[in-house]
Length: 289
Image (tube, rainbow, N blue to C red; front, side):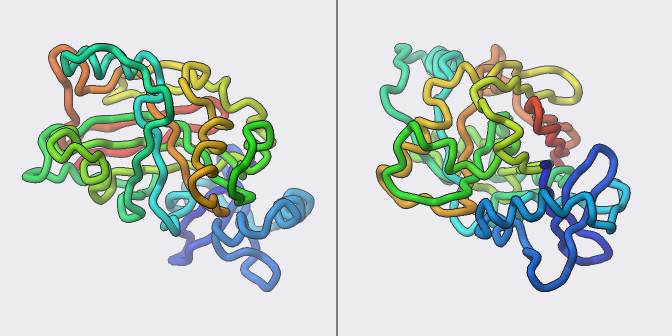
């Protein structure tokens, strides 16, 4: 299922995206009122939704609702992997004039919940704060069943679903402040969507094509097969250090092709349209303003 959060008739609603239409979940007792409630309900609630979906009657055209981020306000920071594609790690090293060294362990940072924004939303360029706004298409992982010290062999069973994330980055802030948090957390710098695709529809998250386009020109084109640390390893590693909880969001890293590493460097400007696309999930489109 392609699960979405949308605004319809001035109300935030949960829905299932089916091609050009949306099936809205009932607003009555026993049904979740938010994506976090649906995720917290566990496999039993998801199974109920799947079974009753054909009988739900509130169906609207997709263009009659405003899509929001699937989880409009995560309870915690979005956890992110840096330098998790070999070709990206290499291009960053070359751009900085450093020796090429691939990470031996996952490089983890976070983005503030206030950076999360919707598919289709305008993203502020933050002129005066940054002049080096960069794109990064990433596979997003949403935790379903939480836990601590999750073995790699069981890690994918803890995943609720997958989404598309654009890890927008203010490169000047990112490199100036050494720690990446500030340059990654400007308001609007974490577009997520358009949907969360349930894990049963993506049995192998390491076999997905992902791409990023700016004003129609392809900037990144790769496969999640190129990750240095796959989704199962990421979940295992994070859960060794902390308890993962239902609704936690993880961005798994970006492939080569970012603007900072190009010759000459390329950065986003007001009016640019960025499209991040992942196979089986969809297209996340945002305009810089």
